[in-house]
Length: 144
Image (cartoon, rainbow, N blue to C red; front, side, top):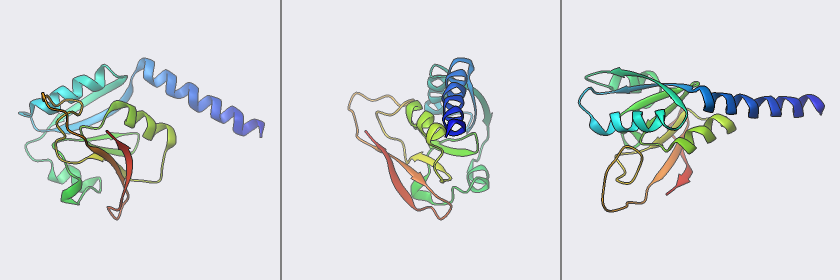
């Protein structure tokens, strides 16, 4: 019991350290996508140490990490601590993913939700963040 409690405290402390000094995340995007660059900037202001790779075609990266279902895709793909983060996912959802460590491939904000981080719009648009497994089965992760 004490070991489990100690491990839990260590895990919380590790998350705090990563938020302070930067959780590494790798973002694959196209060189001309402005909203992708805006999302990268957003991540940097929310506790992430971002490494970016500009590619002309992201299909190979998406397939490599198990994102094969078109309905789950967006304009950029990120990898953080073994998880896929697809599209304009809010930072709080990424931190939650890392904290809870569910048995999923990753999370996605499919398409290009208008009022998501990195996107600009005068009109808010509700959207969902979904988790997905290796069979591309989805569950609701967050609703905005």
